[in-house]
Figure 1 (spheres, rainbow, N blue to C red):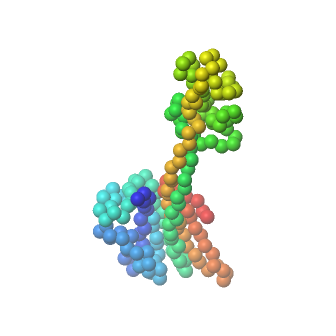
Figure 2: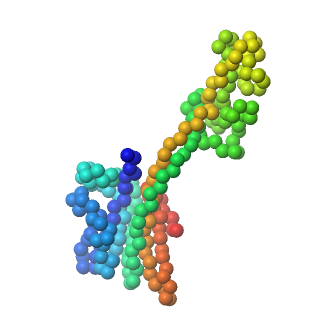
Figure 3: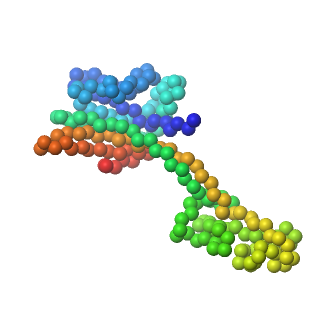
Length: 203
């Protein structure tokens, strides 16, 4: 089973000086254990390599990515923590050029061989062609209208250079951190979407 590993862990800091970590000695603590009434700071930080080895012993699937930034949320006044993860699965289709080993995605703005469906490689301009085994010659699609060799009239074989299409599954996790508070009698929210790369944006 393809499970996307978690790259961020949380740490809670309370107003009495105590802390609650998402993992204690490799074992997870439930998010529901967080005491919002005492919470003054919530931190998302990457795992260390040692933590990765310890936690993954129980097949929880976390990954240490040392270059990821740490995010700190200070919960002052009546701010209440918001935190959750979003898991995404997407099927991606692509073409692969056998001549230059370039992977590319076809779209309507790209060059396309019109007579026989064959995208033109954006890197080396290769595409499918006809090949005659008798003559040991290759022909562009425009050089024959009936699929027969222009020289010996034998049947041509189509060599698929770019037209074969493949697909793969992409998985990723977004980490959403923020807070809600009451301003002038209205409930307001601030949310930050954090990517697995460490990039973030306000949502």
